[in-house]
Amino acid sequence: MTKIKQKQEERRTLDSVLAALDLRPDADPVEGETPDFTFLSEARIIGVEITMYHSGELVEGGLQVRRQAEAEWDALSAASIEFLKKRPDIQNVNAGLMFIGPVPPKRDHAAFMEEVAAFIKQKEGKLGPDNIACRPHTFTGPLMKKYLSTIYLRTDKHAIWHSNLAAGFVARPGPRIAAIVADKSKKAFRPAEELWLAIQASHRISELISTIGGVEDFVDVPSLDSYKFSKIFVLAYNGAFEWNREVGWRQLTGEPSSGDNPSFGDLKDVLDDPEWLSDPGGKADREARKAIAEMRASKDH
Image 1: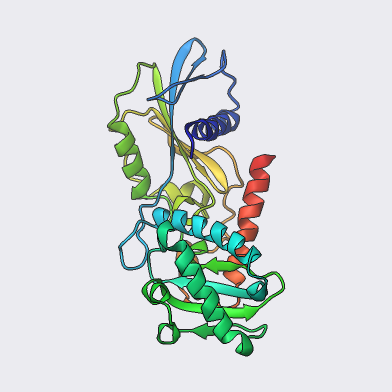
Image 2: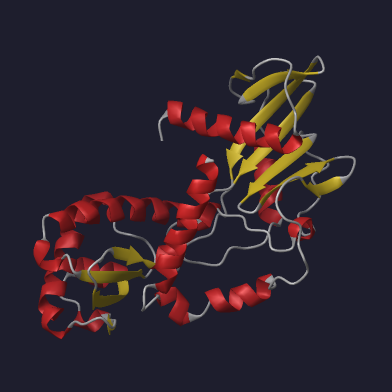
C-alpha cells in the first residue's frame, strides 16, 4: 500500500469515528504522524492514532503469519485470473486450492500455476459438476506437493481458483485488543490534551472483528487503564465500540445483541468442520465473496 493510499484509509477510519460520535471538529483534522491526526474540539487538541486490527494468528504449521499468507494469496489469485485468460482450455475448471500452511512466494507463482494447469489437463476427462478431491500422492509437480494438502476440481462455466484462506475462525475481542493497545502505547506522541486510538477491522480473516454479543463480547479484553489513550475505538464488521476510562466499553453504532444469536462456541464448531474448511462444493468461498462484496458496498455508501 502506498503512503497516499494509507493516509486515505486512515482518514476514512477517522471519519467513521467522528460519525459514530456525532462529533464535528472545530476545524478540519490535520494529518501528521504519531498521532496520525489532530483536531480541535471545544478548543481542546485531540490526537488520534489509527491502526489496523491484526489477529497475529499463524497458518497451519506455524510457519507464516496468516496476514502474510493472505497477502501472498491475494497476489496469486490475481495472477491466476490473468493466467486463465490465456488458457481457454482450462477456463471451465474450478480449482479449490487447500494449502497446508504458507502460500507459494511470488517468485514461484508462474511455476506453481503451470503445475496446477498441467494437473487439471491430466484430470479433465474425469471432471464433472461435482467436486473430486485430489490428494498429494497424485500430484506430479514439486510445488503442488510442497504447498497443497488437497485440490478440489469440478467443471463450472464461472470457474475460478479459490483457496481455504477465504474462511476461518474469527475469535471474539480479547487479549489481542490489549496487545495492540500496549504496542501502540510505546510510541512517543506529539503533545495533545487527549490521545485516542482507533482500531480498524477489514474483510480479511486476519483483520476481521465480528461481535456477536455486542458490547458484552469485550468483557474479556484486559484492563486498558495503564496505557496512554483516554479513548479507544474498535471499528468492527457489525458496529463501532468505544472504551474510555470513566465508563469502560460501550457500543456506538450497529444493532445491539438480541440474545438470540449463536455463541462463539457454536460458530467455532461450524468453522472447524473439515468439510467447511476444505470447501469441496465451493460454498465457503461463495459466502466469503458475498460477505466481502456486501462490506465493500456498505463502506462505499
